[in-house]
Image 1: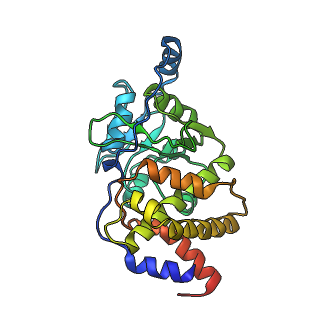
Image 2 (image 1 turned 90 degrees about the vertical axis):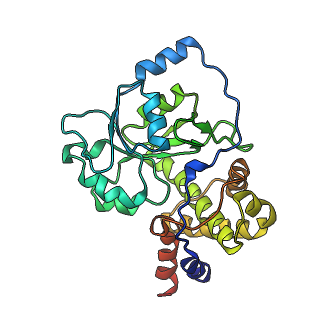
Length: 285
């Protein structure tokens, strides 16, 4: 693994990759009954939303005009209440944290990709609410589309922490799937998504111009081998056992976002976690 992650270190691209520019295969949603929709609306909790991009704007639309939007350079209001959805890039999380009143730290809800655990622990909020986002917003103002797969037609989006039920209620109101998980239950799917983005982006970077779909189809042996390697490393580091079928689940998700471009970014939060494991186990690279 050390060699792979040494290679990945040199393949980090400066090109920014917008996850929201990708639209998964559209899965037709069943219309909710009026009674269930009403109960969802009753469960809706007004929130503070940090970030006005595609995901932040989509969450705001679900809130029915009752949310507070915090944009770049603004602080979370002292007298605000409810969940604080952090819909920003990982590289500005420190600034968001500093702009949040200390008594509101427990209400932060993080929707970022990547390994956040070390950062959350460093801020004293290891149990903060998190969301695994498996839906996409093609462009600002578009409705979100659920990224359901042929192996998980029930949906993969999940939330954990204090505000997980509020997250689920909000997403359900828009016809999106969302499971509410305990922190222990959340760890395995969180690691699986980390493995997915690290494996597919790295193999894609080794084959310039490849989309996620090309990686899954044309370089399947390579990406499956890497998925197995990363899953073994993550399982050992976290003392857990993944459910059978990790490779199949992650390849199925790749097929649902087949035209997603590949590039390495946010190395510190993604591939970098495995790179550090390599250094610990194999000596300094």
